Picture 1 (spheres, rainbow, N blue to C red):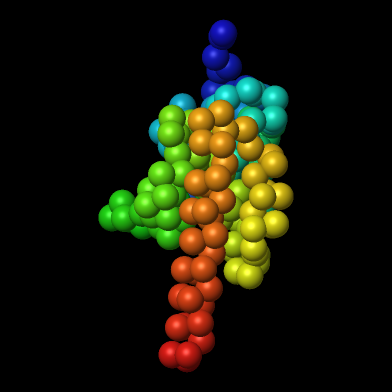
Picture 2 (tube, one colour):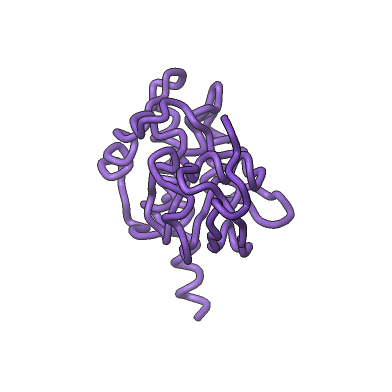
Length: 173
């Protein structure tokens, strides 16, 4: 594939995991390819390239989106979060990631990043989400290894932990 000249590339600016991004990219470059190959955030996986498997899920302004169906230029001015944004700057795992680890909610790990991003968006909007809402979110993701039971268990555990953190924050205020 021939790369476009600098004049044919377009500038895109957005925030990725809290860091400003200001780059030029080809007009038809997918967000999944942009974050993986241009920025190096390889946690966003590309599976089906048709938006079906969910492996490429990121959040755009807090809402889950398929990065393989989104052009990089479409996220101008947006806040993008990938699985790398779930851990802190020192690399410590977030609540969801830790629950997945404790509950063996991943096997090959290919689908995990997308699932984590969808669940993170769910819990950001609804800390009271229960098993029904969790299972509903998982319908957009294909996991061939776990059978989903440990994923649901981990998500339920993480949700309970996040609710408890919220209660402590309210009590301390």
